[in-house]
Amino acid sequence: MSQQDFGRVAVLFGGTSAEREISLKSGQAVLQALQNAGVNAEAFDPAEQNIGDIKAYDRAFIVLHGRGGEDGTMQGALELLGVPYTGSGVLASALGMDKTRTKQLWLGCSLPTPAYARLTANTDFAQVVAELGLPLMVKPAHEGSSIGMRKVEKAEDLQPAYEFAAKYDSEIIAEKWVTGKEYTIVILGDKALPIIRLQPHQSHGFYDFEAKYNANDTQYLCPCGLSDEDEQALQALAVRAFNMVGATGWGRIDAMRDEQGNFWLLEVNTVPGMTDHSLVPMAAKAAGLSFEQLVLTILAQTHK
Image (cartoon, rainbow, N blue to C red):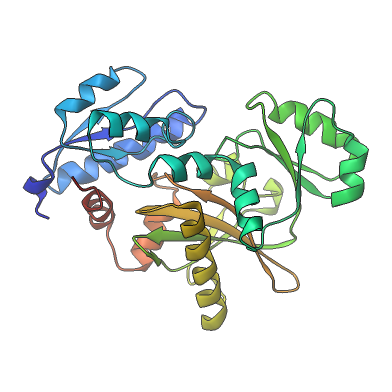
């Protein structure tokens, strides 16, 4: 497609989720790249504009992170309004945003993902520790960017971690901690791009919000250090996990490799970050794609 064939494009970013600030950065980067490439692209913030006005556009590039943009609600609205959009559809977006149900689906498909427990105010926290062991990772089921997450290393810290996460979501999970190396696998179309290994500074404990967006001491290793055989195996696993959720277009799978060499799937992101600290542009660059080429490739996946 030529840039003129895209018509008038709305770049949706901002929104009302806890990830609004990251979405504003991602969206501005996408908007600038599309405009630099000659696309008639305009900013559209659903928090400040009437979503009905989107009907005036020929297609939408979704860069809304979190609830209200990544969870299927915006995708459903765009379908009702007849506006083609980037990325996954309603079902895959809703599933991908729900860490609990993503894990249930993967487990049902015999894909490896760490054992977990759902937490409520009435949970027997000592029993969770007895079943899953320590450390544990506690996360809100419907948040991204590591918002509301805490690593629990002592049994008495599990309930406070739950209460902290519950400020962000009504559904909380505790996940068995995987000791090992963390990787991210970007999916573009039906292929996995070169894998990136994430190595946050030990002061962070894990790849948290600070390590993702503000720290300058996080290392992103690409080549990732895996053998060719292991990298291909992880890429194949990631593509399968992505497809099982029904995700399409573009996205990201996060995974760990434990000290025994086993891979574990953590989560899927159907609208990953596109900031200067983000992983999708890094992987695209490793595959020989500039940021402009990346956003044009994603936009071209929309169709009428």
